Amino acid sequence: MRVFLIIILFATANLALGQDQMQDSLLRLDEVAVYGSNAQLNLVGSRVIVPDENLVAFNKQASLTGFLNSQSSTYLKSYGNNMLSTISFRGTNASQTSVLWNNFSINNYTLGQTDFSTVPLSVTDEVTLIPGGGSSFGGSGAIGGTVALANPLSYRKNMTAEIQQSVGSFNTYRTLGSFEKSTEKLSYKINAYYNVSENDFLIPERNLRQEHAAYQSYGALTALGYKLTDDQKLEFSLWYNDNYREIQPTLSGGSNNSDQQDENLRTSIQYQLQSRFFQLHSGIGYFNDKLDYKDGLARSLYIVNRIEGFSKITTSLAKNHIVEAELRGNVISAQNPGYEQEQAFEERYSIMVQSRGELFQKINYAAHIKQQYISDSPESPLSPYLGLAYQLFQRSRHKLKLKVSSSVNYRIPTLNDRFWQNAGDPELKTERGFNNELGLELNSGISNLQNNFSVTTYRNLISDYIQWKPTNMGNSRPENVKTVEILGLELNNQTSFRVNELKLGLDLAYSFTNSTVLEAEREIEIGKHLVYVPSHKANVSLFTTYKVWRLSYLANYTGKVYTSQVNTEVYALPQFILHDVGFQYALPSGITCGFRIRNALNTNYQTYAGYAMPGRNYELTLNYNFKSNN
Image (cartoon, rainbow, N blue to C red; front, top):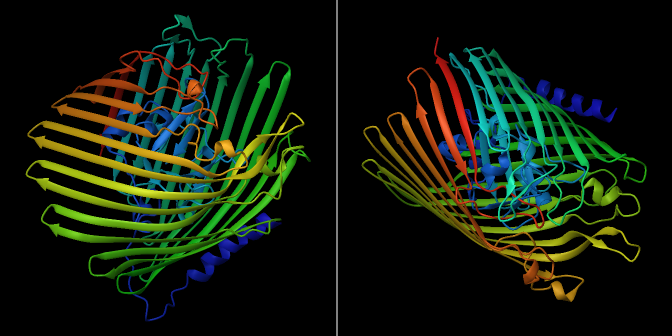
């Protein structure tokens, strides 16, 4: 019944707002983007990263894990090669990052996080990274940052087809295929993938083969859009993903017979209306996530069903000022043998109001506030955001911009935190994050040379930090035990140069993160660094294209990482640098041949203590691409 009411709510909103009668005071509104790139409009005072297309292409065969590791603001810890991979965004933990797909959350609601090894980069057309707090944009969990994935449809006459096959080390085979056809009224696309690997890599410096780490994954994403009129369109998306893997054992030895299968079904229907005076964007999605874990004869099956819907109206009440209001509902039903009643049910509703535009000449602003309501909870998290961007200087191709923002963000305790049998606590407080950010952007161009530089500093104060703690009964329980302060500095520089048929691109990035425990129950933890948060991280990306040849080089540096709450040096993971090199040759027939060397210097490293990662490995790729504008 509640689900039915949500559907009625959004359907009624469409009918009510779809009337032609509008007040004369409203001004004409230009069409804007509605997916991840919209973050640049809504978060004008914050750093928003739209990755370089060269970097996306270089990592296309990989999962999001490899791609995100090339960003200085993120640290991915993996429990082995292509095993569970979770993110640390600006020093926060995995459950403090929000992951969106076409405006819907796809985080696992039992754990509150996303396993990025199960998300292939090839399935998405746009990736937007939003470091820093943004709960008013990304919802619960966006204390550290947001990863927004999108598959926008084009309504221009076009047809493209692509198929890609690769063969790599450890008996690894990857197949990708895509097809897109569009007219002025109808648009359709499908992306499909299949990956399989024995994953029996040679462990560096041990001369041993990794055992019990094979994996297989396949899936497809399809999207269909139809323009009902010049001002209205209806779009449907479906993403199915199936991922099986043997659970890689630790280096300490011992047998491991466990395996895991993840199955995800994500669907959405979205309606957009662009009138002279307002925009309406409504959508509803159904999501089914299954995790089947087996360890010998023991088996655990976890199932989460969700229905999420939203309705958003955008209008202009004055010149250069946009006003937007959004209603959103989320109904969650989870089946978990570890819960007290073996199931959990929750409803979440939110209302968000925002305004953005030009405050004064050369000063743009964005201000929004989001109120979240949670069933059976006395807490109603409030998340305001205020951002300003001041154009300090602009002349020809030279621009200097100052950005500043402040926000309050939150993370609702996960279903596991609250409902786990003999451990969960329904009275846990919501985590709060108070984020302040200051940045400077300098864009300059001379002749064939373009350079973009940015520096960002930030402070994130997180209270009621949730941590699972051991008890005298031999188990663990979640508690609000910490207050954490995270201070950081990020430097980024992108340089591109072109002369005739020669193109050069150089990206440099560095981040410093100081995450310190200010308050904790154990005095010994106060003043210590958070676990699995490197203080230093740096990336270098070099791309060179000449006629039909292309050379790519990536270097990723990760500093020392503590693995114990008291920062015991003997258990810390040492710093390391990974070097990747890629070559590509394009034939006139649309065929491209590529060769890539990962971890070229055969570095021995770990991103999570006790789990081996592969040394030098290779991948050969053959790609065929067809395009037609007819």
